[in-house]
Amino acid sequence: MDFLSDKEWHVVISGTGLQQSLLALALSRSGKNVLHVDANEYYGGAEAALSLQEAKAWAEKHAGKARGQHAPFSAARVAQEDACGLAASRSYSIALAPQLIHARSELLKQLVSSKAFRQVEFLAVGSFFIFQPPSEDASSNHKPRLSRIPSTREDVFTNTTIPTRSKRMLMKFLKFVLEYDSEPHLERWKQREAEPLVEFLRTEFQLDSELQSYIVTLTLSIDGQISVGAGLAAINRHLSSMGMFGAGFAAVYPKWGGLAEVAQVGCRAGAVGGAVYMLGVGISSSQNSTSEGRGTVGITLSNNVVIKSRTLIQNAETSSLEGVRLNRLVAIINQPLSSMFEVAVDNAPTPSTAVVAFPTGSVSDENGSPSQYPIYALVHSSDTGECPAGQSVVYLSIVAHSTSEQLLDAALLSLMSAVSEAEPAQSIFRLHYAQACGNASFIVEDRTGSFDWLPADLAFNDAVLEQVQQAWKFTASPSDEETYMTFDDRESFDEDNDAFDS
Image (cartoon, rainbow, N blue to C red; front, side, top):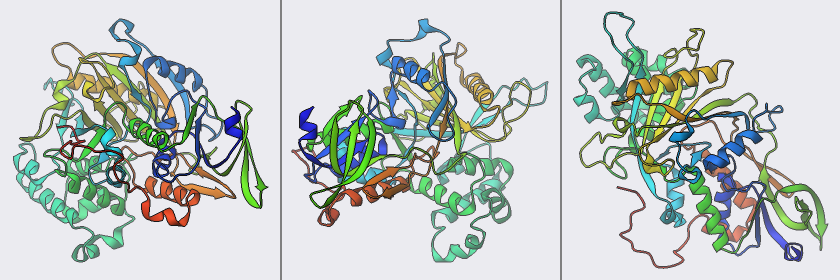
């Protein structure tokens, strides 16, 4: 390991989470000496994708309670219900923090401009559904069902369950939200920007509670209390992304583990650019010092090697947003749940992901108490590479509170009841855990920069990228600014090769 100590590194990056990996991508053409380490034996950090064996080991490591806000994960446990139904460990790739990426996301633009998109296979995210519990009428024999949310004007026209008058009002809202930030429309909502979106929908567009639920679901608000300003921006992003890469979908999902795959691509670009990578090696301590009249950071690695660097980039030890926590449940299902991945419009690709929202109060815990927050389920087919053919993976999440684990289990059972095919669907593996979230900010103290944890979003938040660029500016020289995430191809590629699966 002498070669590590024999040079002064320009940048040492600790952790291979999404932010650090995108920074490695940004620095991959800089010509700087970069050392990238991770105490884990796998890439991706809090956004990693794990095999079954890795997931079990990860759950054991994070089984205890979090000490304050010093650990992003806690209360992890595995419930393996039917080991006979599981394939080999490496047949699975369980994403710890799955997120959709809207077609108009700045992340996709940067992956294209940096040419990293060529190494990622993107799959279409299909329909958004609302869970509707069984009817309270005992004579109806009505079982729980999923109602597909219309998210285009064509969807609204062809929908047979929405009354004609409600369709007109919904159409007016969809037309409004596509141009909500233009001058004629600003007066209508700007003064109400901080008010709840549901109240705005009720008073301005006379949308009933069911249509309000449809709209709020498209925002993917984790607590259902999204404001007018944030809600209109989220709906505009969804609608304006529809059809950008093909008919029938507004968002994509990276194959083989979502953001974990994007993180690996960033690290791969860093390695091609000359960065040195070391897994299973973390940082024990660091101390600012002066070397040859220039400020440096003295760093002791977990293998006792001492190095020095001009800058150090690491994870923050604590979150800046105390109390923002999610409870998550990952379940492997013994059926493909094919009805969730049907093509909704002509010429659309077969989707690999569907979104199901359980509105507040739609499921209850074992004591009969209804949920206080919405629950979201991301349902993934085997096309994502996260499970074998004939199975599917469901990722459920809810704002953490005393009965949230029970509610996640109840939502899973309700989902399987609503979509079961000839034989009842069953979960053959379940992973429960809690996750603390942050705001992805970047804080500099002397020669050390620290990334906060990612926000609790189900769709990728482009604000994360602003902090990555701040970190790049902290580590790069001013002359590098024009080349941020904009690179030429390293080699010739077929221009007809489409990174988006169709």
